[in-house]
Length: 137
Image (cartoon, rainbow, N blue to C red; front, side):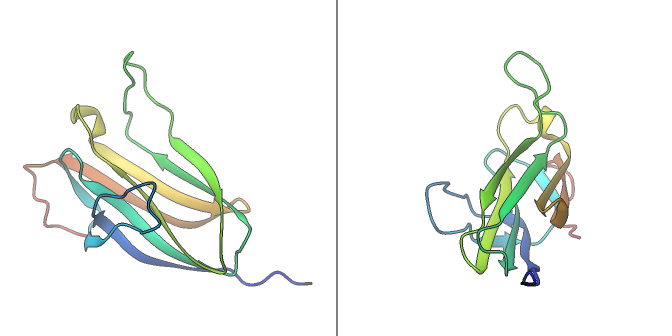
């Protein structure tokens, strides 16, 4: 039997309301942009809608610009996998900014993969909060 055609649509990207990991609700969309001001607790990322992939494993990755751990060593990208729960599924991939701000500046590349194929990706540029944050891509 032939596999169903996978459909992926990026619903939102940019700044979102704070995401509660225990909640079934996705964060609320606030502003479309790829330029993120470095402010503590600002939430950014993207929401995708995936159809035709129920029960498939999806890999996610957030490759940050070199965030350091408590010992001053660069942390590895944040990654993992989830199983797609329904045939019409919305998924949020995002992160937030915390202190210190300096090691959070730069490009944050986020992507999703199914069967070694990238199905969604976006790069966000975290900049000092005093830079122009009205530009969007």
